[in-house]
Amino acid sequence: MLLQPRLLPRVLSISSKPRFSPFSTHASQITIPLPSPPILSPLTPESDLDPSTQNPITLPLQKLFVPPETQLPGDATSASAHTRVLTGSNIVLGPYAFDSQVVNAEFVKSSVRTADCPSDGLPEFALVGRSNVGKSSLLNSLVRRKKLALTSKKPGKTQCINHFRINDKWYLVDLPGYGYAAAPHESRLNWEEFTKDYFLKRETLVSVFLLIDASIPAKKIDLDYASWLGQNQIPMTIIFTKCDKRKKKKNGGRRPEENAETFQSLISEFFESTPPWIMTSTVTNMGRDEILLHMSQLRNYWLKH
Ligand code: GDP
Image (cartoon, rainbow, N blue to C red; front, side):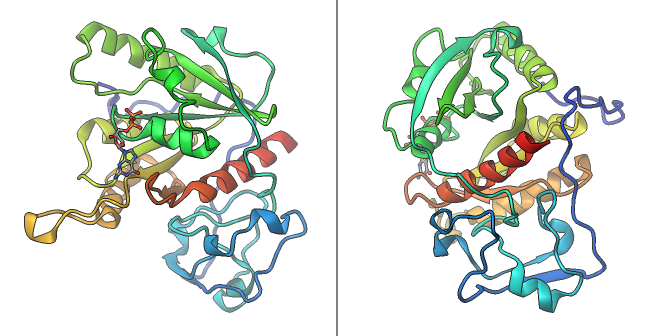
């Protein structure tokens, strides 16, 4: 099991890169209407901003993820004219959101140890989640290739750290799925050890993208995983998957938004500030462009510092 005792001392990040801190202000919530026309920052090419990624949203300020060097004006009136929150997320778009599109993607290598991972220093994002959460589907959708993630599903590769190079500039990393009931107990423990080692030691890891199935209620193993990341101060973005799936209310089903909200409140005590989250579906493509824009702003900031 991944969950550490509550009072485990927080380990300091080994990476010397700056961490992303929350925005603080006196206003308690912010309503962000669609600017018309959208106000673009000088660093954001218009082609990166699909108008559908701009959406009115009301969230308490402390629940927004505000990327570094993104200033929100102190009063909500002026903030509304300058603030863009990605649709279906709590993520404010900042000045580093550019160059988000995937032009090419290639499988580079499978590693069994962190020390064997590529050493060219390019920034990377790790995708992780319970088996069947939709990780391969999401990876294929991000790179717009039907079968790229199949590489990670080949026998012998499922327990590896699989690196995919994007635009020759950054990596998407596919980590082993956890919670696979059929896996032998021992091999399950091994995966956990090596993924933890990767999270704690990989200096080029910009953020973990933890995939959570929003079509079902929160599972303990997912809560354990998220809290371990929080307690160890590993930067994390939550990707809620399968948000197109709506169970019938009369069958006791809860909407993906409700499941997502419950999950967030259950893990909130393990995080100093609200982690970024995005609702997605590979069936409708919901969240795809938002993930890429979010990755671009984290990545560009990381590269500059
Ligand atoms: P992985 O084991 O995490 O790599 O999961 P897969 O990508 O193989 O997906 C597991 C199952 O969930 C497959 O049957 C997919 O078709 C389905 N699935 C994946 N993403 C979505 C989604 O966004 N919506 C719906 N409805 N089904 C999905």
